Image (cartoon, rainbow, N blue to C red; front, side, top):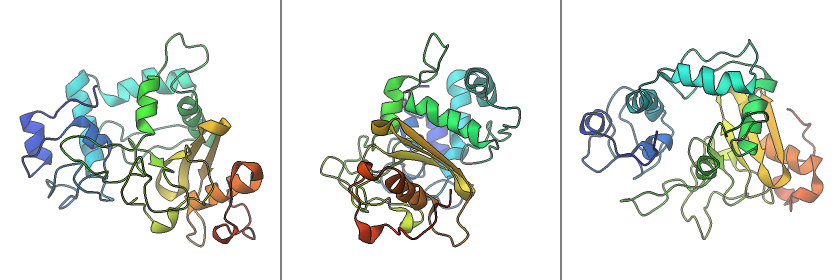
Length: 260
């Protein structure tokens, strides 16, 4: 499914109240529009602003089905779950209609998904990559797409959170703008690798990948005091590998136990 395919008139009218162009790529960046409600059209087209809504992830499975003629569950089972050897405890009953949440599995299951991203889509024993390396690179790069000239969120790729400017809510000279994280306390510690990225789920189910360190981390629970799990992961990385972070001690709580 080409991410730069433009939505047809019917789908465009269904998801966008304005007549500005919308592409599949915008839906992958689900925080790029402001929904009226979960079930209504948006006030603005994707790419023009940022929001924490998950409206677009209701739309992606339908777009996928129309574009490929295959149900997402069929592709997931045959081309991901089986080749990766996910356990029989893994399930994703909402895959055909909602991609924002709903999967359940073991820590090792999610680690395999992280390893696939770390491997740039390659998997041992597979003749061809499961995911194209170019798509992994695009997933982990802030997205800007015509006709919008600014980055709505320089800390977001394609369903991935990025560490564009470690320790700051601002983008970088290459990817300017203001990062929009949820919650705001999610900023990763200053000095953490800028190529760090993560897939963040509900209730602390997170996969953190650091290609420059050939490292991935998985957490399966939230903090009792609502301290950001993403922040805990970043601080834990700096504590376990001191040489990997140019740590600003004022921004890392070294007295906190590793809660992952």
